[in-house]
Structure formats: C-alpha cells, structure tokens
Length: 396
Image 1 (cartoon, rainbow, N blue to C red):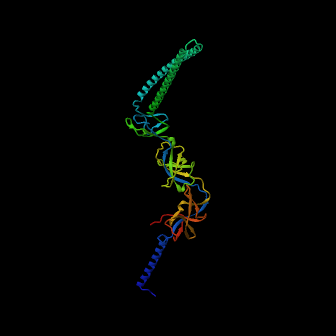
Image 2 (tube, rainbow, N blue to C red):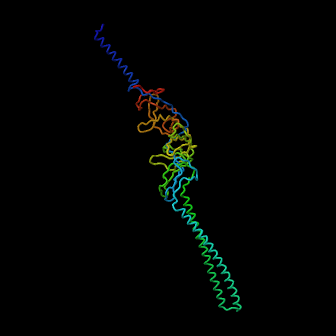
Image 3 (spheres, rainbow, N blue to C red):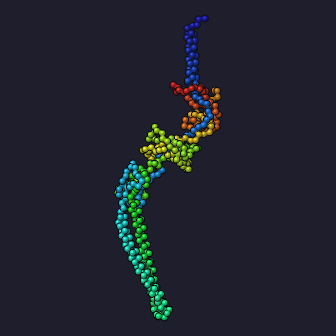
C-alpha cells in the first residue's frame, strides 16, 4: 500500500525524533547528569610506614643578651651597630662615669691616710708594749724587795699601779691599731666596689654574638636594666616548631628533621630535634619542640619562618592506603570500597601518615580491599560508578 505524502512525512519525523531521543539518552548516560561517576581505585596493601610529622615554626636563639647598665646612667659612646659580629670580651659601649673617677681618687687618698694611721697605731702599740714590759719588771722587782722588807708597802703598791696603767695603755694602743686596720679594710672594700662600678660603665660582650638591635644612642639616659644593645649567639639558633597534638605520637629528642626556610624554599636543610617542651598549648592543641640545624646556614635571621618535617620511627605492619582515599561522609572519616558494582562507605580509624602520602589504617579496611582513590564527582551509597585507569576532566 502506497502511503500518502503527509503520512510519509509523519513517519520520517517520528523516526528522526526517536533517533534524537536515543542519542540524547546515550549522551546523558555517558557524559550527562545520568552518567556513571568515573572513579580510580587501588588495592589496600599491608606494609610498614615511616610516618612524618609536619610543623611550622620560627627561628629563635637559645642564647640572647640584653646589654645595659646596672644603674641609671647616660650613654657616652656606642662602638658597634646592628649586624656587627662581636667577640667575647669586646667593648661594646660606655656609659658616662660622672664622678666615679673623682670618688676613686678620694678613696685612694683616704686609703693612704688610713695606712699612715695604721703605721702610727702600730708604733703606739709597740711603745705601750715596751712601757708595759718595763712596768711589769719594776713591779716584780718591788714585790721581791717588799717581801724582804727593803722597801715600803706603799712603794710596792705604786709599782703595781704603774703596771696596771701600762697594761691599760697597751690595750688602748692595740684597740686603736685594730680600728685603724679595720678602717683600712673598709676603705679597700669601698675602693674595690667603686672599681667594679667603674668597670660596669663599660659594656662588654659576654659571648661571640651578632648585634641585633641598638636601642640607645650617645647622650640618651637609660635606667638600670634597660638595654642599650641586644645580641644573639649565631651558634645557638634553632627553630621553635608547633606540631599537632593528635599526630605527635613518637615526637622525641634526636629525631631527624628536614627544614625549609622561607628565605630559601628551594633548599632542604638537615636538622634534629634538640628538645621537646613538656608543656603543650591547650588552646591550639599543639606541642612545641626546638629543632636545631646541622649546621646553621650563614645569614640565618631570628624570626624567619620555617617548615619542618620530622621522620618518625617505622610503624608495625598494617593496612596502608593513599591519603587521597580518605573521605568525609555523614560526619565520619572513611573510604569508599567497591565490591563488584556495590559501593559502600567504610568508616576507618587512622594512624600515622608517611612522607609519600600513604596513611596507616588501624581499623575498618582489610588488606586486598578495592578502595576508591579518585572520583570526578561526590559519591554516595546510590552512586553509579565506572572504574577508569585515569581521570580527565569532562568537557562542558
């Protein structure tokens, strides 16, 4: 039967519509919103992990010095400037001694006079001693003569009085000598103290160091303890690093460290954990450690930021997965496992993380399980997936 032209056109249009619908359905199922999510998968393996611990810190100095006077004074001169390297014992600055030199000269004169007084007191003591010895000998002789009735009792008593008087004069002379010596010692102590005070106006470097700050200029007045200069010892520079408490198991002194300074991001420096602080930060939930550089590079500046990666001891054998496989779903951490076409979310308990991106799975996944690592869209329990060797972004 021959169809009429209108019927033929209707059949052609229906066929074209069906073909177009099939094409749209094919496109939607392959690359549209109804298409299966493309995923990359790996097999969970068992092995040992060398975990790493990452932290950020800043360069600090174990030995820093605030150099200033011990009493209020005016700065007379400053011999160094910021950036200068100084040696231990090198003069750095000098304060105005005011009247210390004059007081020292006066004390020297007083000490000389005290020494003369001591010599005079010693001479008086020797004279009193001689008089006492003479009076004692006369008293003994008169006592013997009185016993033989050659002299009267009054004469004997007079000699005894002379002896007592000479003994008293000797005691006074000895006391004067002791007082003169004590006065000489007092003046000598005052002079020693003044010399220390005079020496303290010269500010001396306590260690081999670098000047980091010059806080006072000649002519300015500073109070006791106020810094004129600030120094740091370059050999004492280390990095104070903060680490997440939740991942800090195994953090201990002696661990090897890889350090990248903000000023030289293309170079990795070697270091070692020198000390772990016993007090953590309860607000930021971080632990602090000091990491020393071996050796410190030239030009290292205090306050510079640094990234530190520590290599922790190897873990026991456990299931390992790429860190990229760990997802969040329903407020829990876990992985998407694939058994045939069945997709399931498995919550896991994680351990340490390695420098190569591997993470230790302590519970939730067994070795040999197929786990989704990458997907080109968010996954859910009802998602349709298609395993591919590699993911390339879909064209819009």
